[in-house]
Length: 316
Ligand code: HEM
Image 1 (cartoon, rainbow, N blue to C red):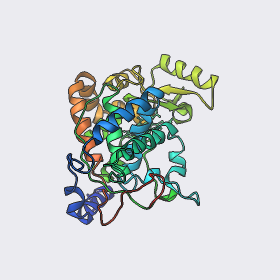
Image 2 (image 1 turned 90 degrees about the vertical axis):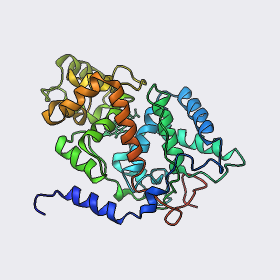
Image 3 (image 1 turned 60 degrees about the vertical axis):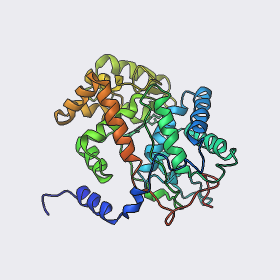
Image 4 (image 1 turned 45 degrees about the vertical axis):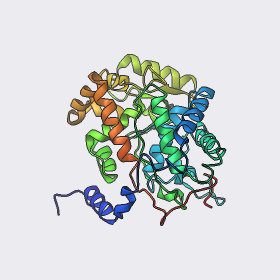
């Protein structure tokens, strides 16, 4: 037992405790008769949201991760509790951009405006489909999304445990192993940082102190954050809203924004995977799709443990 890490033990326990039906119920054609136009409706709604704001895509993808990582993919991140005790109000979720929540609200309204679909589709599934759209409509892979999740009824501030921008490789591996992911899958998922941006407080401490940061890049970030210490931000890569492998090429030249990004290249144990994704976009896309599908299976609720929420913000 001494040689086996705690996250591994927890992952095995979680897998053993999860009823087999929780995963088995997920199917790509789950809504084929309940809401046959579901994917078209969400595709067009997310397209509109992304046209309204370039933040919508990145914010929606991040929202999906923050939902699945806490209590599983059950849309608990969307719940607004009247006593103020909910996941969204945890400090680690304060930087989630409102555009992500709005994208899901818009998609839910579009789904419910089809009489056949009204109150048939879970908020958790809408979030999973919207995250795929954020990827695909940014130029990334178009992959089949497993569906059939039910929405959770609980959301509390203290249940939120998320990775931090200053994590080293061991901390990242241990966090993601707790959700059932390998190091390679963790690196593929980190590739989600190919779209969007980070606010200065998440990386400012590295400027001038982290020797792995390219000096010209450090100067650039420094002037951005000095000019606007509270509202300054940096895009993760040069193709801001383009889903591609340029995030990994930036890591190779010391231009990763977060410490948790750059360490994937700096640490020699994960460098080969970064190099592979940096030179082979197809490999990144294939692994990202696999890891996103796996992320979508985390802690899925069933009809017995969840519900189809009528308003994504409030349990029925
Ligand atoms: C590996 C551990 C991770 C850490 C430490 C981390 C941390 C962060 C931080 C600090 C930000 C900046 C937030 C802000 O300033 O508003 C961010 C943004 C983002 N994250 Fe992560 N993240 C991680 C994994 C992921 C994963 C697995 C995904 C999805 C697959 C993801 C998707 C995103 C996206 C798309 C953004 C941009 C959001 C926007 O522009 O509004 N992240 N992340």
